[in-house]
Image (cartoon, rainbow, N blue to C red; front, top):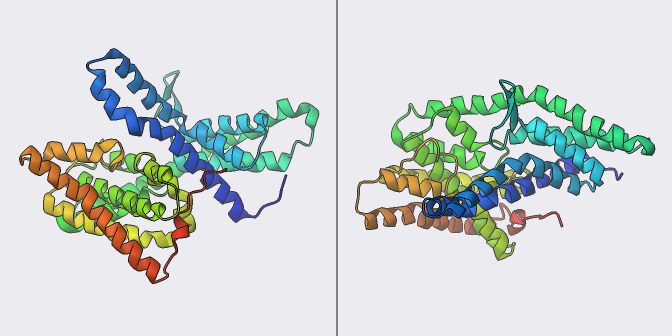
Amino acid sequence: MEKMNSKDFMNKILQGAAMGIVVGLIPNAIFGEIFKALGSHFAVFATLAGIVFAIQFTVPVLVGMFSSLEFKLNGLQMASVIGAAFIGSGAARLVEGAWVLKGTGDLINTMLTVAVAILIIRWYNNRIPNLAIVITPIIGGVIPGFIGLLTLPYVGKITGLLGSLIANFTTLQPLLMMILIAVCFALIIVTPLSTVAIAYAISLAGLGSGAANVGIAATVFTLAYGSSKVNNKGTTFALFFAGPKMLMPNYLKNPIMSLPIAINAAVTGVVAYIFQIQGTTASAGFGITGLAGPINAYSFMTATPVVRIIILLVQYLVVPLGIAMVTHTIFTKMDLYKNEIFTFNSGK
């Protein structure tokens, strides 16, 4: 196998994770709410709603698969990595003698498990070809999967600690609280951490949930506008459904992206305070994906339907897009970064 440095190795893991997230989440992000609404009238749409929702459970598997493709592993090696990723993600847990699926699992631990599996497989390098079908699943699947289970509780504490920090923001003056929460969620959404898990961990609701949603929306528009300068329309369009994690590798390699994202989130947080945008714990980590944020915010408003829609358009479209355009134009002219940092690598 070809030699590579640690930077290239991690970039491939990140790229594989980004692709796995995109493929696993897009079906439900696009059709989830539509199928749910139609499901109450037509049984076939209720079934389809269940299908696109269930596809999300395959994210750990897809992360393992796309990461394996990045490293050009063969079918046997890939299958072993996929098995390890699924176990290490914690998506399947043994509860009272029965295996239960629990969301997409812990993405950080999934990536860690995949990295361990691929490292072991690369180290082994098919030294005993005749026994590959026996040895590879054990050293590339069972062992890294076991390691992933051991690290899962400790990696999960990262989410808990960050949640505790954000929970402290809810005790502050409302305006400051909304700005800080918006900025935090705007930055977290583009990392391997789960905004949904954090929202549930601290039962984020009301104005706090609204701030989280608008912060994520700010990130989406910041990345989408930058993406529109270098990527095709399909890639930019996909950002609104797959979410900011689609450009996670770009962000982690170019932390300067934090600047326009944070500014956009802070401004949208102020506007959210003015409009008193609210939400529920269930909607707090999604932003505009599946329109979860706007739909929940609409239900908390007391104005006429027309006024509500105008407010939501200003909050979730006009402001974040406008700030994204301004910050991107200013920062690229100042040479703080170039358009190319938003280039999406599809792994081709």
